[in-house]
Length: 463
Ligand code: SF4
Image (cartoon, rainbow, N blue to C red):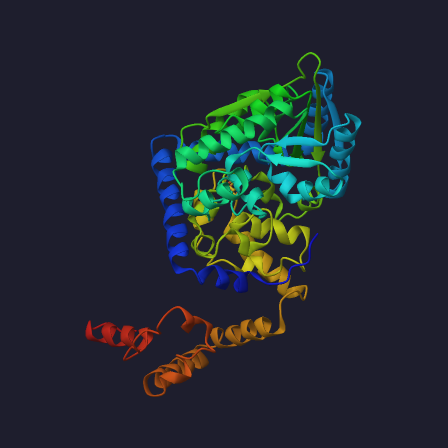
Protein backbone atom coordinates (compact mmCIF):
# COMPACT_ATOMS: atom_id res chain seq x y z
CA UNK A 1 0.00 0.00 0.00
CA UNK A 2 1.38 3.40 -0.97
CA UNK A 3 2.39 5.82 1.75
CA UNK A 4 0.14 8.82 2.20
CA UNK A 5 1.94 12.12 1.92
CA UNK A 6 -0.83 14.60 2.61
CA UNK A 7 -3.86 14.40 4.81
CA UNK A 8 -7.43 15.02 3.66
CA UNK A 9 -7.49 18.67 4.73
CA UNK A 10 -4.38 19.52 2.68
CA UNK A 11 -5.72 17.83 -0.47
CA UNK A 12 -9.17 19.34 0.03
CA UNK A 13 -7.48 22.72 0.21
CA UNK A 14 -5.79 21.97 -3.12
CA UNK A 15 -9.14 21.00 -4.71
CA UNK A 16 -10.66 24.21 -3.34
CA UNK A 17 -8.13 26.37 -5.19
CA UNK A 18 -10.32 25.94 -8.30
CA UNK A 19 -13.48 27.60 -6.98
CA UNK A 20 -15.55 27.11 -10.15
CA UNK A 21 -14.77 23.36 -10.20
CA UNK A 22 -15.79 23.02 -6.56
CA UNK A 23 -19.02 24.87 -7.24
CA UNK A 24 -19.89 22.76 -10.25
CA UNK A 25 -18.81 19.46 -8.54
CA UNK A 26 -20.96 20.34 -5.56
CA UNK A 27 -24.01 21.22 -7.68
CA UNK A 28 -23.71 18.18 -9.97
CA UNK A 29 -23.60 15.74 -7.07
CA UNK A 30 -26.44 17.52 -5.31
CA UNK A 31 -28.48 17.23 -8.53
CA UNK A 32 -27.92 13.45 -8.39
CA UNK A 33 -28.89 13.43 -4.72
CA UNK A 34 -32.17 15.18 -5.67
CA UNK A 35 -32.79 12.65 -8.45
CA UNK A 36 -32.29 9.94 -5.86
CA UNK A 37 -34.89 11.56 -3.60
CA UNK A 38 -37.47 11.76 -6.39
CA UNK A 39 -36.86 8.13 -7.39
CA UNK A 40 -37.12 6.97 -3.77
CA UNK A 41 -40.33 8.91 -3.06
CA UNK A 42 -42.02 7.30 -6.05
CA UNK A 43 -42.00 4.03 -4.14
CA UNK A 44 -44.44 4.02 -1.26
CA UNK A 45 -42.65 1.14 0.43
CA UNK A 46 -39.16 2.71 0.17
CA UNK A 47 -38.48 2.60 3.91
CA UNK A 48 -39.73 -0.99 4.11
CA UNK A 49 -37.34 -1.88 1.28
CA UNK A 50 -34.42 -0.28 3.16
CA UNK A 51 -35.37 -2.16 6.30
CA UNK A 52 -35.66 -5.45 4.39
CA UNK A 53 -32.25 -4.92 2.76
CA UNK A 54 -30.71 -4.13 6.11
CA UNK A 55 -32.21 -7.27 7.67
CA UNK A 56 -31.05 -9.50 4.78
CA UNK A 57 -27.53 -8.11 5.10
CA UNK A 58 -27.59 -8.61 8.90
CA UNK A 59 -28.49 -12.21 8.29
CA UNK A 60 -25.65 -12.53 5.77
CA UNK A 61 -23.12 -11.11 8.21
CA UNK A 62 -24.33 -13.42 11.00
CA UNK A 63 -24.01 -16.49 8.76
CA UNK A 64 -21.35 -15.42 6.30
CA UNK A 65 -19.28 -18.57 6.72
CA UNK A 66 -22.19 -20.85 5.78
CA UNK A 67 -23.39 -18.71 2.87
CA UNK A 68 -19.89 -18.55 1.42
CA UNK A 69 -19.50 -22.32 1.53
CA UNK A 70 -22.95 -22.77 -0.02
CA UNK A 71 -22.02 -20.29 -2.76
CA UNK A 72 -18.72 -22.08 -3.43
CA UNK A 73 -20.44 -25.48 -3.67
CA UNK A 74 -23.12 -24.20 -6.06
CA UNK A 75 -20.59 -22.33 -8.22
CA UNK A 76 -18.36 -25.40 -8.48
CA UNK A 77 -21.37 -27.51 -9.47
CA UNK A 78 -22.00 -24.93 -12.22
CA UNK A 79 -18.49 -25.56 -13.57
CA UNK A 80 -16.89 -22.42 -12.14
CA UNK A 81 -13.42 -22.45 -10.54
CA UNK A 82 -13.57 -20.73 -7.15
CA UNK A 83 -10.48 -19.15 -5.59
CA UNK A 84 -10.03 -17.72 -2.09
CA UNK A 85 -7.73 -14.78 -1.45
CA UNK A 86 -6.82 -13.71 2.08
CA UNK A 87 -5.58 -10.29 1.00
CA UNK A 88 -4.97 -7.96 -1.94
CA UNK A 89 -1.58 -9.48 -2.81
CA UNK A 90 -3.02 -12.98 -3.01
CA UNK A 91 -5.94 -11.74 -5.12
CA UNK A 92 -3.55 -10.09 -7.58
CA UNK A 93 -1.35 -13.19 -7.77
CA UNK A 94 -4.36 -15.44 -8.45
CA UNK A 95 -5.68 -13.20 -11.23
CA UNK A 96 -2.23 -12.94 -12.79
CA UNK A 97 -1.75 -16.72 -12.67
CA UNK A 98 -5.04 -17.27 -14.54
CA UNK A 99 -4.10 -14.72 -17.21
CA UNK A 100 -0.63 -16.23 -17.55
CA UNK A 101 -2.02 -19.75 -17.83
CA UNK A 102 -3.91 -18.61 -20.93
CA UNK A 103 -0.85 -16.89 -22.39
CA UNK A 104 -2.56 -13.50 -22.65
CA UNK A 105 -0.99 -10.04 -22.42
CA UNK A 106 -4.01 -7.74 -23.07
CA UNK A 107 -7.21 -7.88 -21.06
CA UNK A 108 -10.41 -5.87 -20.59
CA UNK A 109 -11.92 -5.06 -17.22
CA UNK A 110 -15.30 -3.62 -16.30
CA UNK A 111 -15.84 -1.54 -13.16
CA UNK A 112 -14.75 -3.20 -9.94
CA UNK A 113 -14.00 -1.26 -6.78
CA UNK A 114 -12.44 -4.39 -5.32
CA UNK A 115 -9.74 -4.41 -7.99
CA UNK A 116 -9.15 -0.69 -7.23
CA UNK A 117 -8.82 -1.58 -3.54
CA UNK A 118 -6.27 -4.28 -4.45
CA UNK A 119 -4.40 -2.05 -6.97
CA UNK A 120 -4.81 -4.82 -9.55
CA UNK A 121 -4.13 -2.62 -12.60
CA UNK A 122 -0.74 -1.48 -11.29
CA UNK A 123 0.19 -5.03 -10.32
CA UNK A 124 -0.72 -6.50 -13.72
CA UNK A 125 1.02 -3.71 -15.57
CA UNK A 126 4.19 -4.49 -13.60
CA UNK A 127 3.85 -8.08 -14.88
CA UNK A 128 3.63 -6.88 -18.48
CA UNK A 129 -0.16 -7.19 -18.83
CA UNK A 130 -2.07 -4.33 -20.47
CA UNK A 131 -5.39 -3.67 -18.76
CA UNK A 132 -8.08 -1.61 -20.50
CA UNK A 133 -10.89 -0.37 -18.27
CA UNK A 134 -14.08 -0.52 -20.32
CA UNK A 135 -16.44 1.58 -18.22
CA UNK A 136 -16.35 4.98 -19.97
CA UNK A 137 -15.68 6.99 -16.80
CA UNK A 138 -13.01 4.54 -15.70
CA UNK A 139 -11.36 4.64 -19.12
CA UNK A 140 -11.23 8.44 -18.93
CA UNK A 141 -9.43 8.44 -15.57
CA UNK A 142 -7.22 5.58 -16.73
CA UNK A 143 -6.11 7.59 -19.78
CA UNK A 144 -5.47 10.52 -17.44
CA UNK A 145 -3.35 8.31 -15.16
CA UNK A 146 -5.62 8.92 -12.17
CA UNK A 147 -7.66 6.70 -9.86
CA UNK A 148 -11.49 7.09 -9.92
CA UNK A 149 -12.76 9.88 -7.68
CA UNK A 150 -16.24 8.38 -7.12
CA UNK A 151 -17.38 4.76 -6.94
CA UNK A 152 -20.27 5.20 -9.40
CA UNK A 153 -19.13 8.29 -11.35
CA UNK A 154 -15.36 7.78 -11.62
CA UNK A 155 -14.63 10.99 -13.58
CA UNK A 156 -17.22 13.28 -12.03
CA UNK A 157 -14.44 15.81 -11.33
CA UNK A 158 -13.67 16.18 -15.08
CA UNK A 159 -15.25 18.80 -17.34
CA UNK A 160 -16.29 17.81 -20.87
CA UNK A 161 -13.77 20.24 -22.39
CA UNK A 162 -10.98 18.50 -20.45
CA UNK A 163 -12.22 15.11 -21.65
CA UNK A 164 -12.24 16.45 -25.24
CA UNK A 165 -8.59 17.45 -24.84
CA UNK A 166 -7.71 14.10 -23.24
CA UNK A 167 -9.34 12.19 -26.11
CA UNK A 168 -7.59 14.43 -28.61
CA UNK A 169 -4.24 13.46 -27.07
CA UNK A 170 -4.92 9.73 -26.62
CA UNK A 171 -7.56 8.79 -29.19
CA UNK A 172 -6.81 11.37 -31.88
CA UNK A 173 -10.23 13.10 -31.85
CA UNK A 174 -10.32 16.62 -33.37
CA UNK A 175 -8.94 19.28 -31.05
CA UNK A 176 -11.61 21.41 -29.40
CA UNK A 177 -14.46 18.92 -29.91
CA UNK A 178 -16.06 18.41 -26.51
CA UNK A 179 -19.48 17.23 -27.63
CA UNK A 180 -20.43 14.42 -25.19
CA UNK A 181 -22.17 12.34 -27.89
CA UNK A 182 -19.22 12.60 -30.22
CA UNK A 183 -16.75 11.73 -27.46
CA UNK A 184 -18.86 8.76 -26.36
CA UNK A 185 -18.95 7.47 -29.94
CA UNK A 186 -15.16 7.87 -30.19
CA UNK A 187 -14.71 5.94 -26.93
CA UNK A 188 -17.06 3.23 -28.16
CA UNK A 189 -15.05 2.76 -31.33
CA UNK A 190 -11.77 2.74 -29.39
CA UNK A 191 -13.09 0.19 -26.87
CA UNK A 192 -14.78 -2.01 -29.46
CA UNK A 193 -11.38 -2.99 -30.86
CA UNK A 194 -10.21 -3.99 -27.38
CA UNK A 195 -13.34 -6.05 -26.77
CA UNK A 196 -12.89 -7.88 -30.09
CA UNK A 197 -9.30 -8.88 -29.38
CA UNK A 198 -9.26 -9.54 -25.63
CA UNK A 199 -9.34 -13.20 -24.60
CA UNK A 200 -9.71 -12.50 -20.87
CA UNK A 201 -12.38 -10.29 -19.30
CA UNK A 202 -12.44 -9.27 -15.65
CA UNK A 203 -15.64 -8.05 -14.01
CA UNK A 204 -16.60 -6.95 -10.54
CA UNK A 205 -19.60 -8.42 -8.74
CA UNK A 206 -22.56 -6.53 -7.29
CA UNK A 207 -24.31 -9.54 -5.78
CA UNK A 208 -23.41 -13.21 -5.43
CA UNK A 209 -26.34 -15.55 -4.81
CA UNK A 210 -25.50 -18.35 -2.36
CA UNK A 211 -28.49 -20.47 -3.38
CA UNK A 212 -27.51 -20.66 -7.07
CA UNK A 213 -23.79 -19.85 -7.19
CA UNK A 214 -24.43 -17.08 -9.73
CA UNK A 215 -22.99 -13.55 -9.71
CA UNK A 216 -24.90 -10.44 -10.77
CA UNK A 217 -23.12 -7.48 -12.37
CA UNK A 218 -24.93 -4.15 -12.83
CA UNK A 219 -23.79 -1.64 -15.47
CA UNK A 220 -25.35 1.11 -17.55
CA UNK A 221 -23.13 0.58 -20.56
CA UNK A 222 -23.27 -3.18 -21.13
CA UNK A 223 -19.49 -3.23 -21.09
CA UNK A 224 -19.25 -6.14 -18.61
CA UNK A 225 -21.52 -8.26 -20.85
CA UNK A 226 -19.65 -7.42 -24.03
CA UNK A 227 -16.29 -8.24 -22.43
CA UNK A 228 -17.46 -11.56 -21.00
CA UNK A 229 -19.38 -12.69 -24.09
CA UNK A 230 -16.40 -12.15 -26.39
CA UNK A 231 -13.66 -13.53 -24.11
CA UNK A 232 -12.52 -17.11 -23.56
CA UNK A 233 -12.01 -16.51 -19.85
CA UNK A 234 -14.19 -14.62 -17.39
CA UNK A 235 -12.67 -13.70 -14.02
CA UNK A 236 -15.17 -12.25 -11.52
CA UNK A 237 -13.54 -10.58 -8.50
CA UNK A 238 -15.61 -9.99 -5.37
CA UNK A 239 -15.31 -9.12 -1.71
CA UNK A 240 -16.74 -11.86 0.51
CA UNK A 241 -19.48 -9.51 1.76
CA UNK A 242 -21.23 -9.44 -1.64
CA UNK A 243 -23.19 -12.60 -0.83
CA UNK A 244 -26.98 -12.58 -0.63
CA UNK A 245 -28.80 -15.76 0.41
CA UNK A 246 -31.35 -16.32 -2.36
CA UNK A 247 -32.28 -15.08 -5.81
CA UNK A 248 -35.57 -13.73 -4.50
CA UNK A 249 -33.61 -11.19 -2.40
CA UNK A 250 -32.20 -9.62 -5.56
CA UNK A 251 -35.45 -7.74 -6.16
CA UNK A 252 -34.92 -5.76 -2.97
CA UNK A 253 -31.36 -4.79 -3.76
CA UNK A 254 -31.80 -4.06 -7.47
CA UNK A 255 -34.67 -1.67 -6.69
CA UNK A 256 -32.58 0.11 -4.08
CA UNK A 257 -29.24 0.19 -5.87
CA UNK A 258 -29.98 2.21 -9.02
CA UNK A 259 -32.42 4.59 -7.33
CA UNK A 260 -29.87 5.35 -4.62
CA UNK A 261 -26.97 5.64 -7.05
CA UNK A 262 -28.31 7.77 -9.91
CA UNK A 263 -32.07 8.07 -9.43
CA UNK A 264 -32.77 5.50 -12.17
CA UNK A 265 -35.49 2.89 -11.52
CA UNK A 266 -33.03 0.14 -12.40
CA UNK A 267 -29.55 -0.15 -13.92
CA UNK A 268 -29.68 -0.60 -17.69
CA UNK A 269 -28.07 -4.05 -17.48
CA UNK A 270 -28.33 -6.42 -14.50
CA UNK A 271 -26.52 -9.44 -15.88
CA UNK A 272 -26.50 -12.87 -14.29
CA UNK A 273 -23.41 -15.05 -14.81
CA UNK A 274 -23.95 -18.57 -13.54
CA UNK A 275 -21.78 -20.87 -15.59
CA UNK A 276 -19.22 -20.68 -18.37
CA UNK A 277 -20.65 -21.04 -21.85
CA UNK A 278 -19.26 -24.00 -23.87
CA UNK A 279 -15.56 -23.49 -24.54
CA UNK A 280 -15.25 -20.70 -21.96
CA UNK A 281 -13.63 -20.81 -18.50
CA UNK A 282 -15.13 -18.93 -15.57
CA UNK A 283 -13.30 -18.09 -12.34
CA UNK A 284 -14.59 -16.36 -9.23
CA UNK A 285 -12.06 -14.88 -6.80
CA UNK A 286 -13.43 -14.36 -3.28
CA UNK A 287 -11.40 -11.79 -1.40
CA UNK A 288 -11.19 -11.19 2.34
CA UNK A 289 -8.62 -8.37 2.66
CA UNK A 290 -9.54 -7.36 6.23
CA UNK A 291 -13.26 -8.15 6.01
CA UNK A 292 -13.18 -11.08 8.48
CA UNK A 293 -11.42 -8.86 10.97
CA UNK A 294 -14.05 -6.17 10.46
CA UNK A 295 -16.77 -8.74 11.04
CA UNK A 296 -15.48 -9.24 14.58
CA UNK A 297 -15.69 -5.54 15.44
CA UNK A 298 -19.20 -5.02 16.76
CA UNK A 299 -19.12 -1.23 16.28
CA UNK A 300 -17.91 -1.36 12.69
CA UNK A 301 -19.10 -4.66 11.21
CA UNK A 302 -22.20 -3.33 9.53
CA UNK A 303 -20.05 -1.22 7.17
CA UNK A 304 -19.80 -4.59 5.37
CA UNK A 305 -23.47 -4.22 4.37
CA UNK A 306 -22.50 -1.56 1.80
CA UNK A 307 -23.75 -2.15 -1.76
CA UNK A 308 -21.53 0.64 -3.18
CA UNK A 309 -24.32 2.88 -4.47
CA UNK A 310 -22.43 6.12 -3.76
CA UNK A 311 -25.47 7.91 -2.28
CA UNK A 312 -23.57 8.79 0.90
CA UNK A 313 -20.93 10.52 -1.24
CA UNK A 314 -23.45 12.53 -3.29
CA UNK A 315 -25.11 13.88 -0.18
CA UNK A 316 -21.97 14.54 1.89
CA UNK A 317 -21.18 18.30 2.13
CA UNK A 318 -17.51 17.51 2.73
CA UNK A 319 -17.14 15.08 -0.19
CA UNK A 320 -18.95 17.41 -2.57
CA UNK A 321 -16.57 20.23 -1.75
CA UNK A 322 -13.32 18.33 -1.30
CA UNK A 323 -13.38 15.88 -4.25
CA UNK A 324 -12.77 12.15 -4.18
CA UNK A 325 -8.99 12.26 -4.53
CA UNK A 326 -8.60 14.06 -1.21
CA UNK A 327 -9.47 10.76 0.54
CA UNK A 328 -6.52 8.85 -0.99
CA UNK A 329 -8.39 5.58 -0.77
CA UNK A 330 -10.13 3.56 -3.50
CA UNK A 331 -13.49 4.30 -1.89
CA UNK A 332 -13.89 7.97 -1.05
CA UNK A 333 -16.54 9.80 0.95
CA UNK A 334 -18.30 8.77 4.15
CA UNK A 335 -18.24 5.00 3.51
CA UNK A 336 -14.55 5.11 2.54
CA UNK A 337 -13.84 7.03 5.74
CA UNK A 338 -15.16 4.17 7.87
CA UNK A 339 -13.73 1.36 5.73
CA UNK A 340 -10.20 2.70 5.24
CA UNK A 341 -9.13 2.96 8.93
CA UNK A 342 -10.15 -0.68 9.35
CA UNK A 343 -7.49 -1.61 6.81
CA UNK A 344 -4.79 0.70 8.15
CA UNK A 345 -5.54 2.92 11.11
CA UNK A 346 -2.33 4.91 10.96
CA UNK A 347 -2.47 5.60 7.25
CA UNK A 348 -6.13 6.66 7.20
CA UNK A 349 -6.40 8.35 10.60
CA UNK A 350 -7.42 11.64 8.94
CA UNK A 351 -10.55 10.30 7.21
CA UNK A 352 -13.07 9.93 10.07
CA UNK A 353 -12.43 13.62 10.80
CA UNK A 354 -13.41 14.59 7.24
CA UNK A 355 -17.06 14.87 8.17
CA UNK A 356 -19.50 17.29 9.75
CA UNK A 357 -21.29 14.33 11.42
CA UNK A 358 -24.54 15.76 10.04
CA UNK A 359 -25.92 12.24 9.52
CA UNK A 360 -27.12 12.82 5.94
CA UNK A 361 -25.07 9.79 4.80
CA UNK A 362 -26.89 7.47 7.20
CA UNK A 363 -30.26 8.93 6.15
CA UNK A 364 -29.79 8.08 2.48
CA UNK A 365 -28.00 4.74 2.87
CA UNK A 366 -30.21 2.05 1.28
CA UNK A 367 -28.97 -0.64 3.68
CA UNK A 368 -29.18 1.57 6.77
CA UNK A 369 -25.52 1.70 7.73
CA UNK A 370 -25.06 4.04 10.72
CA UNK A 371 -22.20 5.79 8.93
CA UNK A 372 -22.03 8.98 10.97
CA UNK A 373 -22.08 7.06 14.25
CA UNK A 374 -19.20 4.93 13.02
CA UNK A 375 -17.27 8.05 11.98
CA UNK A 376 -17.68 9.36 15.51
CA UNK A 377 -16.68 6.01 17.01
CA UNK A 378 -13.58 5.83 14.79
CA UNK A 379 -12.49 9.23 16.05
CA UNK A 380 -12.55 7.93 19.60
CA UNK A 381 -10.67 4.76 18.65
CA UNK A 382 -8.04 6.78 16.78
CA UNK A 383 -7.49 9.21 19.65
CA UNK A 384 -7.17 6.34 22.15
CA UNK A 385 -4.74 4.46 19.93
CA UNK A 386 -2.49 7.48 19.48
CA UNK A 387 -3.11 7.93 15.75
CA UNK A 388 -4.15 11.56 16.00
CA UNK A 389 -1.61 14.40 15.84
CA UNK A 390 -0.64 16.00 19.18
CA UNK A 391 -1.97 19.37 17.94
CA UNK A 392 -5.39 17.93 17.13
CA UNK A 393 -5.42 15.98 20.38
CA UNK A 394 -4.54 19.12 22.41
CA UNK A 395 -7.29 21.06 20.58
CA UNK A 396 -9.87 18.35 21.30
CA UNK A 397 -8.81 18.16 25.00
CA UNK A 398 -8.98 21.97 25.25
CA UNK A 399 -12.49 22.03 23.75
CA UNK A 400 -13.61 19.21 26.03
CA UNK A 401 -12.28 21.09 29.10
CA UNK A 402 -14.26 24.20 28.10
CA UNK A 403 -17.47 22.42 27.06
CA UNK A 404 -17.56 20.35 30.24
CA UNK A 405 -17.54 23.45 32.53
CA UNK A 406 -20.43 25.91 32.07
CA UNK A 407 -18.59 28.66 33.98
CA UNK A 408 -15.49 28.45 31.76
CA UNK A 409 -17.70 28.13 28.66
CA UNK A 410 -19.55 31.37 29.47
CA UNK A 411 -16.34 33.18 30.35
CA UNK A 412 -14.62 32.01 27.12
CA UNK A 413 -17.63 33.15 25.09
CA UNK A 414 -17.51 36.62 26.67
CA UNK A 415 -13.74 36.88 26.09
CA UNK A 416 -14.14 35.70 22.48
CA UNK A 417 -16.89 38.24 21.77
CA UNK A 418 -14.77 41.04 23.27
CA UNK A 419 -11.76 40.16 21.13
CA UNK A 420 -13.85 39.78 17.95
CA UNK A 421 -15.38 43.17 18.59
CA UNK A 422 -12.33 45.21 19.63
CA UNK A 423 -9.32 43.35 18.14
CA UNK A 424 -10.87 41.35 15.23
CA UNK A 425 -7.48 40.80 13.61
CA UNK A 426 -6.72 38.27 16.34
CA UNK A 427 -9.48 36.06 14.86
CA UNK A 428 -9.66 37.20 11.25
CA UNK A 429 -6.13 36.35 10.24
CA UNK A 430 -4.48 33.79 7.97
CA UNK A 431 -3.40 31.62 10.89
CA UNK A 432 -7.04 30.82 11.54
CA UNK A 433 -8.04 28.08 9.05
CA UNK A 434 -11.74 29.03 9.35
CA UNK A 435 -10.95 32.53 8.11
CA UNK A 436 -9.49 31.24 4.81
CA UNK A 437 -12.87 30.79 3.18
CA UNK A 438 -15.22 32.87 5.28
CA UNK A 439 -15.52 36.14 7.13
CA UNK A 440 -16.25 35.68 10.80
CA UNK A 441 -19.82 36.84 11.55
CA UNK A 442 -20.67 40.14 13.24
CA UNK A 443 -20.31 39.80 17.00
CA UNK A 444 -23.61 39.27 18.79
CA UNK A 445 -24.45 41.71 21.57
CA UNK A 446 -25.08 38.92 24.04
CA UNK A 447 -24.76 35.15 24.24
CA UNK A 448 -27.76 32.92 23.53
CA UNK A 449 -27.80 32.02 27.21
CA UNK A 450 -28.06 35.71 28.22
CA UNK A 451 -30.74 36.32 25.58
CA UNK A 452 -32.72 33.30 26.75
CA UNK A 453 -32.63 34.31 30.41
CA UNK A 454 -33.66 37.87 29.58
CA UNK A 455 -36.55 36.77 27.39
CA UNK A 456 -37.79 34.22 29.88
CA UNK A 457 -37.87 37.02 32.48
CA UNK A 458 -39.71 39.34 30.11
CA UNK A 459 -42.30 36.61 29.61
CA UNK A 460 -42.77 36.46 33.38
CA UNK A 461 -41.18 33.02 33.80
CA UNK A 462 -38.29 32.05 36.02
CA UNK A 463 -35.29 30.56 34.29
S1 SF4 B 1 -22.57 3.17 2.72
FE1 SF4 B 1 -24.70 3.05 2.05
S2 SF4 B 1 -25.02 4.97 0.89
FE2 SF4 B 1 -22.78 4.69 1.04
S3 SF4 B 1 -22.19 3.58 -0.80
FE3 SF4 B 1 -22.58 2.03 0.78
S4 SF4 B 1 -24.72 1.44 0.50
FE4 SF4 B 1 -24.44 3.37 -0.60
